[in-house]
Length: 177
Image 1 (cartoon, rainbow, N blue to C red):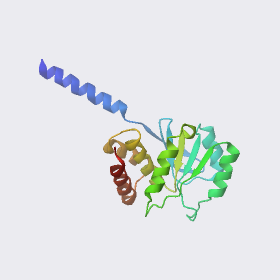
Image 2: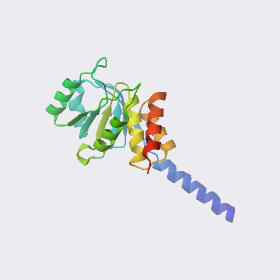
Image 3: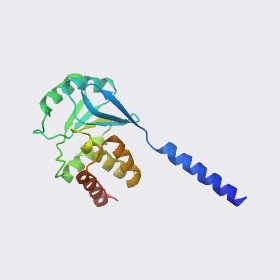
Image 4: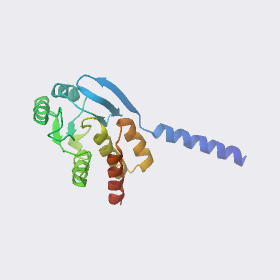
Protein backbone atom coordinates (compact mmCIF):
# COMPACT_ATOMS: atom_id res chain seq x y z
CA UNK A 1 0.00 0.00 0.00
CA UNK A 2 2.84 2.40 0.83
CA UNK A 3 4.41 1.73 -2.58
CA UNK A 4 1.13 2.48 -4.38
CA UNK A 5 0.74 5.71 -2.43
CA UNK A 6 4.32 6.68 -3.21
CA UNK A 7 3.84 6.00 -6.93
CA UNK A 8 0.60 8.02 -7.00
CA UNK A 9 2.33 10.91 -5.21
CA UNK A 10 5.24 10.89 -7.67
CA UNK A 11 2.87 10.81 -10.67
CA UNK A 12 0.77 13.69 -9.30
CA UNK A 13 3.92 15.73 -8.64
CA UNK A 14 5.23 15.05 -12.15
CA UNK A 15 1.93 16.15 -13.68
CA UNK A 16 1.94 19.30 -11.53
CA UNK A 17 5.48 20.18 -12.55
CA UNK A 18 4.75 19.53 -16.22
CA UNK A 19 1.64 21.71 -16.16
CA UNK A 20 3.54 24.47 -14.32
CA UNK A 21 6.10 24.71 -17.11
CA UNK A 22 5.46 27.76 -19.23
CA UNK A 23 4.55 27.26 -22.83
CA UNK A 24 6.64 29.11 -25.38
CA UNK A 25 4.77 29.81 -28.59
CA UNK A 26 6.84 30.65 -31.66
CA UNK A 27 5.23 32.51 -34.54
CA UNK A 28 6.21 33.99 -37.85
CA UNK A 29 5.33 37.68 -37.87
CA UNK A 30 6.21 40.01 -40.70
CA UNK A 31 8.94 42.44 -39.70
CA UNK A 32 9.96 40.48 -36.57
CA UNK A 33 12.79 37.94 -36.36
CA UNK A 34 12.50 34.90 -34.04
CA UNK A 35 9.21 35.82 -32.32
CA UNK A 36 8.58 33.67 -29.22
CA UNK A 37 5.85 34.39 -26.66
CA UNK A 38 5.47 33.08 -23.11
CA UNK A 39 1.81 32.94 -22.15
CA UNK A 40 0.56 36.53 -22.44
CA UNK A 41 3.18 38.13 -20.19
CA UNK A 42 6.13 38.55 -22.52
CA UNK A 43 7.48 38.02 -25.98
CA UNK A 44 11.14 37.88 -26.88
CA UNK A 45 12.39 38.40 -30.38
CA UNK A 46 15.22 39.39 -32.60
CA UNK A 47 15.30 42.31 -35.01
CA UNK A 48 12.14 44.36 -35.44
CA UNK A 49 11.33 46.72 -38.26
CA UNK A 50 9.59 49.99 -37.38
CA UNK A 51 6.66 48.91 -39.57
CA UNK A 52 6.04 45.96 -37.21
CA UNK A 53 5.59 48.15 -34.12
CA UNK A 54 1.88 48.87 -34.69
CA UNK A 55 1.30 45.12 -34.88
CA UNK A 56 3.09 44.64 -31.56
CA UNK A 57 0.65 47.12 -30.00
CA UNK A 58 -2.30 45.29 -31.63
CA UNK A 59 -1.07 42.03 -30.04
CA UNK A 60 -1.66 43.69 -26.68
CA UNK A 61 1.85 44.59 -25.57
CA UNK A 62 2.21 47.67 -23.39
CA UNK A 63 5.92 48.20 -23.96
CA UNK A 64 8.85 47.46 -26.22
CA UNK A 65 12.23 47.00 -24.59
CA UNK A 66 14.95 47.25 -27.23
CA UNK A 67 18.35 45.85 -26.20
CA UNK A 68 20.16 46.65 -29.46
CA UNK A 69 23.14 48.95 -29.71
CA UNK A 70 22.75 52.10 -31.81
CA UNK A 71 25.55 51.04 -34.15
CA UNK A 72 24.31 47.50 -34.87
CA UNK A 73 23.72 46.72 -38.51
CA UNK A 74 20.03 47.17 -39.26
CA UNK A 75 19.20 48.83 -35.94
CA UNK A 76 17.13 51.98 -36.40
CA UNK A 77 16.41 52.97 -32.82
CA UNK A 78 15.03 56.41 -33.68
CA UNK A 79 12.58 55.05 -36.27
CA UNK A 80 11.42 52.30 -33.90
CA UNK A 81 10.96 54.83 -31.07
CA UNK A 82 8.95 57.09 -33.39
CA UNK A 83 6.79 54.15 -34.52
CA UNK A 84 6.19 53.20 -30.89
CA UNK A 85 5.15 56.75 -30.04
CA UNK A 86 2.78 56.81 -33.01
CA UNK A 87 1.29 53.45 -31.97
CA UNK A 88 0.90 54.51 -28.33
CA UNK A 89 3.23 51.90 -26.87
CA UNK A 90 5.97 52.54 -24.28
CA UNK A 91 9.44 52.32 -25.81
CA UNK A 92 12.56 51.73 -23.74
CA UNK A 93 16.04 51.55 -25.24
CA UNK A 94 18.49 49.63 -23.06
CA UNK A 95 21.59 49.08 -25.21
CA UNK A 96 23.26 45.83 -24.15
CA UNK A 97 26.56 44.71 -25.63
CA UNK A 98 26.31 40.95 -26.18
CA UNK A 99 30.06 40.43 -26.03
CA UNK A 100 30.66 42.63 -22.96
CA UNK A 101 27.34 42.84 -21.07
CA UNK A 102 27.03 45.48 -18.36
CA UNK A 103 25.31 44.55 -15.07
CA UNK A 104 23.92 48.11 -14.88
CA UNK A 105 21.75 47.32 -17.93
CA UNK A 106 20.36 44.24 -16.17
CA UNK A 107 19.64 46.40 -13.10
CA UNK A 108 17.67 48.86 -15.25
CA UNK A 109 15.93 46.03 -17.12
CA UNK A 110 14.62 44.50 -13.88
CA UNK A 111 13.30 47.88 -12.75
CA UNK A 112 11.56 48.50 -16.07
CA UNK A 113 10.15 45.00 -16.59
CA UNK A 114 8.47 45.06 -13.17
CA UNK A 115 6.70 48.39 -13.68
CA UNK A 116 3.00 47.56 -14.18
CA UNK A 117 2.66 50.07 -17.04
CA UNK A 118 5.21 48.11 -19.06
CA UNK A 119 3.42 44.76 -18.90
CA UNK A 120 2.98 42.79 -20.99
CA UNK A 121 6.41 43.49 -22.45
CA UNK A 122 7.91 42.83 -25.87
CA UNK A 123 11.68 42.43 -25.43
CA UNK A 124 14.02 42.28 -28.40
CA UNK A 125 17.58 42.52 -29.65
CA UNK A 126 18.95 41.40 -33.03
CA UNK A 127 18.53 37.61 -32.70
CA UNK A 128 16.76 36.99 -29.38
CA UNK A 129 19.99 36.07 -27.52
CA UNK A 130 20.16 39.10 -25.23
CA UNK A 131 16.37 39.24 -24.82
CA UNK A 132 16.26 35.62 -23.63
CA UNK A 133 19.18 36.19 -21.25
CA UNK A 134 17.44 39.19 -19.66
CA UNK A 135 14.24 37.15 -19.31
CA UNK A 136 16.27 34.38 -17.62
CA UNK A 137 17.50 36.90 -15.05
CA UNK A 138 13.97 38.18 -14.47
CA UNK A 139 12.53 34.69 -14.03
CA UNK A 140 15.04 33.74 -11.34
CA UNK A 141 15.33 36.99 -9.41
CA UNK A 142 11.77 38.32 -9.67
CA UNK A 143 9.62 35.22 -10.26
CA UNK A 144 11.80 33.05 -7.96
CA UNK A 145 12.21 30.22 -10.48
CA UNK A 146 15.16 27.89 -10.10
CA UNK A 147 18.03 28.39 -12.56
CA UNK A 148 17.41 25.17 -14.51
CA UNK A 149 13.73 25.85 -15.14
CA UNK A 150 14.39 29.48 -16.11
CA UNK A 151 17.29 28.48 -18.36
CA UNK A 152 15.12 25.91 -20.14
CA UNK A 153 12.45 28.52 -20.86
CA UNK A 154 15.00 31.14 -21.90
CA UNK A 155 16.62 28.68 -24.30
CA UNK A 156 13.21 28.13 -25.92
CA UNK A 157 12.82 31.89 -26.31
CA UNK A 158 16.18 32.45 -27.98
CA UNK A 159 19.52 30.82 -28.47
CA UNK A 160 21.63 32.19 -25.61
CA UNK A 161 25.32 32.61 -26.40
CA UNK A 162 27.90 31.26 -23.94
CA UNK A 163 28.87 34.85 -23.04
CA UNK A 164 25.28 35.88 -22.28
CA UNK A 165 24.54 32.63 -20.42
CA UNK A 166 27.60 33.12 -18.19
CA UNK A 167 26.70 36.78 -17.67
CA UNK A 168 23.09 35.95 -16.72
CA UNK A 169 24.03 33.15 -14.32
CA UNK A 170 26.79 35.24 -12.70
CA UNK A 171 24.41 38.19 -12.36
CA UNK A 172 21.79 35.94 -10.78
CA UNK A 173 24.31 34.50 -8.33
CA UNK A 174 25.52 37.97 -7.32
CA UNK A 175 21.96 39.27 -6.79
CA UNK A 176 20.15 36.35 -5.15
CA UNK A 177 18.74 37.21 -1.75
